[in-house]
Length: 128
Image (cartoon, rainbow, N blue to C red):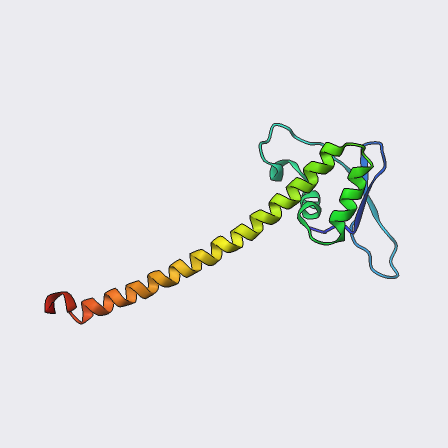
């Protein structure tokens, strides 16, 4: 997958996209025709991968997406883009916290198992 440098709507249902550019090379522009499938239930199944990469990215491409969305004169769409970006960011942070707590719990379980095995090896229940 190539993350776009910028995208631009050409107002006829097409989107121009600069996918990659190296100094001294010509600029290639791909025309994308978006055909959403509203029968699917999740955004990951309906949205193009490049769109999701921009939508969840933390670099300048997200700001380019917002600027282009503002040209659509649809404040609800811009709001949903911001909302999705914020919720995805919160989801990522919570997932990291959950992974940390899971790691701490696994470490505690290992320590408890070590103590339990030692007490059995030393036959502490029998001696007490």
